[in-house]
Figure (cartoon, rainbow over the protein chains, first blue to last red):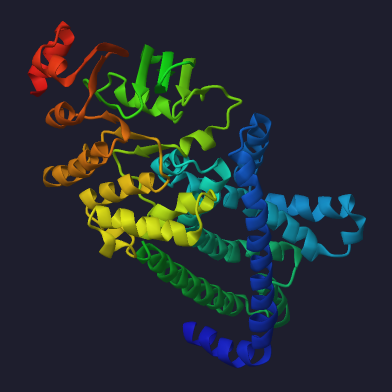
Length: 227
Length: 245
């Protein structure tokens, strides 16, 4: 049986469909992941600032947002995005890729908020005190002393978030957005070789995430050595 | 305030949650004076020192620095902190900057000096503590004693009027205490107004013009080093000194 599966992969799947997996599927998966993490980081940074602000209602709103996002399944959020976004913005009704992306971005932003907040708060309080005692303002202390150190905590965590998002985007295939998992559904529909397609998709996911997480830890080590 | 005091506190109180740490401290420091604060752990001496540059905000009382009530929320505290150097128990070097950049960050960021002026001053200050050759390394490679000496000149790079020392040798290995105390002694000799929280009794006796003994949120006794160490009056002072001397 195993030999048959391997044979099918190399004879019936890869020669005919490899470009679907590697170009379309992986392409869309990486594009979706990049959009999610980039926009999620921008939004998450703003939310982290609000969460650390002195104005309580801002903090409460961000906390509520983060808790709701983290406390509900991503698939549910994707469904809501899929149905809600076109109703709110009719111009997007024909573009499910954007609707799903918005849901993914909001989800990722919640996690990034916590990554940035904890990265900043992990910087020793003595650093802030030393900077303030020299007469630096709160903003100067943040930009010259705290953030340069927090970045070393934040960047590797964002790299890991990217790896996690690559896997999470597979849920978007529920809406046939063209990612790797969507290509599995497509090719399986054409060939009726489910296990073979799953293996191909699995290997691609694994290779990409493995290489990326190795790169992240190498980068992390380099940051640490700079001290 | 019509007097010569560079720092004056009026009945300051500070609590952390339910713990009443300062229970009304009224004190003063004159220009050029060296005041040491001794006392048992938890007596409030570090909290009192940290109130002097508003790192802790007292809930009651006033703090005057060079005649300005810096406990007033309307006062821009950053401007006044530039004139008060502080040295911490844990050094608090900026690990992402070189030793030289640690010294030049505040003067250049605050527009007090040009980059060239700040660098020249940093060279001078590092030479004074014998660490000129360490100017371009990161603090992570320095020993504790070296870090604390650099921390002292980092504060001096802002050319402050007062130096506040918060247990500057408590986190050091014993063999490094001497080198740090020597730097402080040298600084005090130049006439720098200093307030020093310390557990080093011999050092306090040697450098201070006045010694404050704090216990349980009050300044229980104060006087010249001879009075406090030679002939303490308060039973709590006697008890404390009998334990540490």
